[in-house]
Image (cartoon, rainbow, N blue to C red; front, side, top):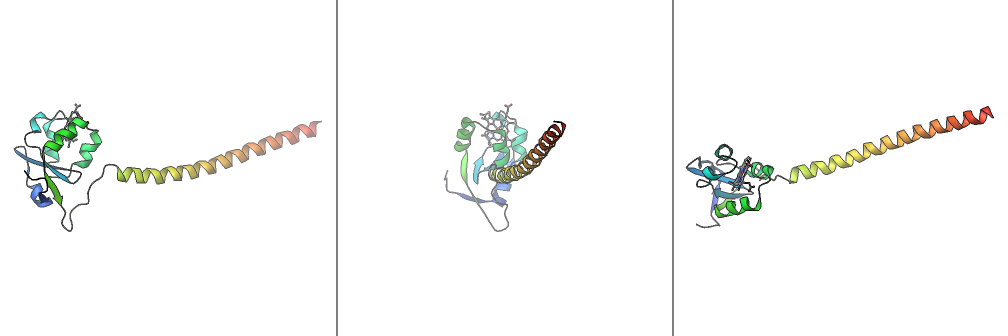
Length: 136
Ligand code: HEM
């Protein structure tokens, strides 16, 4: 079994049955046919992503190092990308990029709120002190 074998999306997509099941995880191709019956998460989830990129599904579950070792043992090759093929899926790149921009936006809104509330309190205190002075 050669680790440098390259398979196109079309070739991989043909392996989508229980007896002949290829999955893509992080642009590597794995033959999971022998593992389907043993998967602790059930065969259904593996068949759902058979012949497709299952990187997100695999990473979302937070699989253990043991799961990754099992995966390594089933390696058959890498994905050969052709024009028009889907982009590699990364479970982490998109959320981290959007969360950093939303957190900076959140900081901006929080800063405005802080200035407004602080100004209102200062104004209230100023009025209170003026009223106190007027009474004396
Ligand atoms: C072919 C690649 C996969 C391998 C080698 C694999 C292996 C494993 C292993 C060893 C476990 C036991 C817990 C652990 O060690 O993390 C597990 C659990 C699980 N897997 Fe996978 N898995 C694969 C793909 C998937 C995919 C694509 C899904 C889709 C959602 C999935 C869903 C689950 C779920 C839900 C559990 C938890 C089961 C439970 O705790 O009841 N797995 N997997």
